Length: 518
Image 1 (cartoon, rainbow, N blue to C red):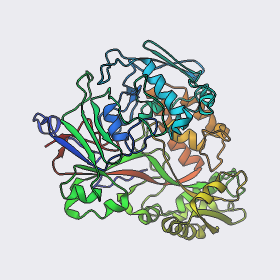
Image 2 (image 1 turned 60 degrees about the vertical axis):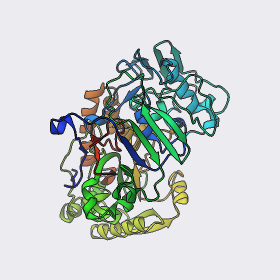
Image 3 (image 1 turned 90 degrees about the vertical axis):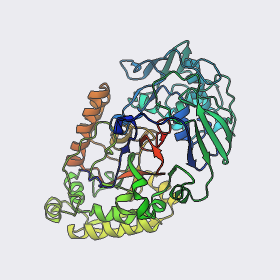
Image 4 (image 1 turned 180 degrees about the horizontal axis):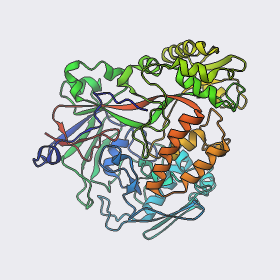
């Protein structure tokens, strides 16, 4: 079950849809801060800008979740054809797409985007989402320039994978899959001149100093665009810049936005992202191995509200007891564990006779927040007869040890979320035992249940709507019956906008293609 804060606005849409008036066209929309790179193979901080300028194979609609978190065709003419073994995806590229330079967009432009991400010179942070393409390793090691699993001919792009990965279409909604000119060079510094093929194009870019987007005169698609320019520029404190009218938009960390004065709170919008925070229960260790009653017991015993309060309260996220974020396609809100306060009576009943050694090792990072949360868990599990010992480690050392086979922790704190919306990328990556030991798993709880694995396998083979429904049901059943982790927070992305900003769609950051000036 998930609790939504009353102050959370998933989206505010101003203009013809909300007020019955035409949307005002024109004006300059100002963004606080300028990215240090705009190359889709390299950048991590220009995704909002690239989402307005590029064409991807698939994208999320210019709408708030839940519709806005579904995967729809963009550069592709429709959903890809998938082979029976789930390893080959065939995309037909939509005709009529052009870069602002006049060059038509073909399958080759998407193939080159993949090549550039995998090229060793880019050292791309996005390579993780392409490493299972056949031949990707050869490119990453400098033994080839093109992965053998990617074929581009005219309007047809074929991508072959080393294993079935039903989240692959959703991966192509990330800006790393932006179509790029076929002659765009590969370099460690990244391209600084980049013609757009989406509603906007890059007019001017100076790394970390200025980025100017203007409408793409050759764009013929259906995405909205209202303003004459979108200007990114350094402003010092981004929150103060929006508060004082020097900028129209800032995405800032929760601690900075928590200090926003009350008079500006109507301009603060929290949108559900694709990540959750949870307590890992290590099923490879004797305490929780084959012990679902104890795993359920600790879920009833832990004070979720207290854990979230330490992180900043409702401004950082929403209370939850499920593994899918509420914005994820397929999510079904269910009443599984108490969110307002623990249920010690149920917890003690389930734990009785199942606490085994009576001790649990909790490993956490050496941050005040993690240490405070560790003390809450110690307190909450004591009534069950569990003595929790806490080991505090620096972040790098902690993660090195967590990924070391046989590490002696029973619990740890974790935040996880993919860069795109797909339930496979949450549930299978975190809990599918078939992926244990592969680069595609983040299953630090070593949860491995043949029955659940069969449900994962069945859900993953379904087509979009049925697959979303199956994963929604699987999420509820997994949390209720097996309880491989203690989910406690559905994290929010916080956005601050000026009073003159309109046509606002948060998904979860601000959709810059859709904005207008009131």
